[in-house]
Image (cartoon, rainbow, N blue to C red; front, side, top):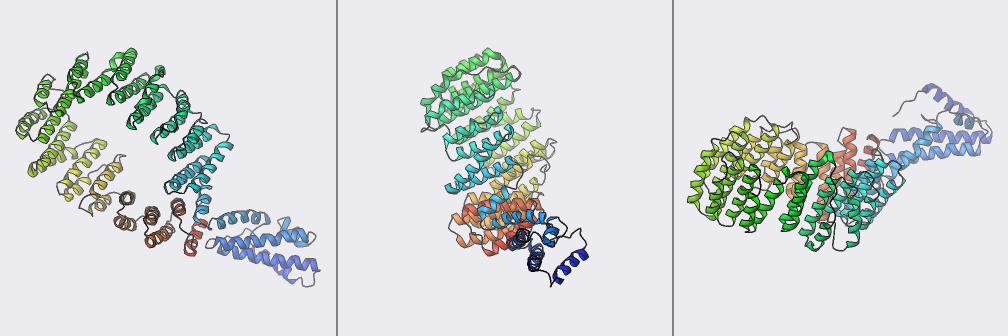
Length: 634
């Protein structure tokens, strides 16, 4: 309960005098009665505000109504003059503080009506307009995925209003990006395009257009929007323009709309900016690769010629990929002609190496080996090609030639100086022996790799190799060795969480059901990793494992988030009782979080998912939510 800067004795004396004026005129008597009632209502509200904001609001509103009645009906009384001049407090509040208090409590009380109002109440008190728009976008996408189109449309309208009224170009651009993403997710292409057209910053515009392509644009039923899209692309940087063109082209081929590709090809490519010339050439290389992978060889060569006109030193990357694609399609002579046309020895040799591997996949191993004999031994790509050929021979069941080539490979590896290459080689050998059911050899190779991995000083490489090696230990039936090796992760490096998560998800799909949790507790990020694991189980509809993991998370914050998502998935699966329990438990867990910021995030997360899943704000849930709203900083 708040304490006032005014002496309590003075307040009590004022109240005593008012109560003692039994002989005052009727107007004074009525004004005093109303004031005393208001005084008591404020005192009551202050005591219950944290636990019951709804009842507190009713008391504050009643107190304000009484004070306003005194001022309106009895303006000449002493108490009216004293209150309006802030000489007398109403409980512990001035009239101004009471007037500010009522709308705040009104909004807070209204937020307890249902989870949608709660979600919007929390969003509107989160950061600036851009932060709010981003949260609204997240809310809209959750609503859309859950089939709540009515809610989705209301939320999108809220975002649009924020974009329309905002004078800051920077903020308006970000809000319009969220609008574009939301409309693209729902396949509302016309609205997505309209929102993208409002964006002025070309980097943000690139994000918006890229998201549209990733979400499925262009679609067959919106050809009239293609021209608008292509015109917007002209505002991008040249390299972003070309990369987006490559993504669009790949999408058209993948979706069976190759007839639209010539229209894109007919468009003139933008001129490069001198300061980003190499980035532009790299983007052209990506575009050339898209064409070659989809057998548009003439288009690929046209892009290669464009690269050569800019700087012929960098065309080798694209030519190598084009040659490899020809080989993949049994066009060996054409592939070799392209490779041999390269003046740079490195590009020429690596192109022949890639062609040899593709030729071997087509069944011509002997000729592939002859081609590799022409490649300098110092190239790591030659060694990699030999390993790929060995895999191909094993797949063909030609173990004799595979063993012969393996002996030659091992001799060459011993002369290789790169520690990374040697580790990759040991891991590959372990996998090869595993594939051939040579368990002891597989284990020996893996042990050699492990020794080298532990000696690595590069944290990113060490984490990458630990993940790969630990996965092999699991496949070999040694989860204990996988766990022991995982203890050597560089846990402070940014590569740790993705690597450990990948390892845990892989382990989750094996018979070692306890292994993912055992792995997670190796680091201080265990709650986050277990939350990701619970998400994995939910995506695979393994509700039993998801429930177990969610309730075992020791962090109240991550447990609350997991239970919030779990409740929605259980509801969608028709497991009503389990869903209702986890929905309430999500709030109960959020109430135990000590950090106000985390508490607010957990409550918002819960409100978003509960509202789209249709959970009611029961009396029990209202009792849990009310104190949370009063406690968190908004």
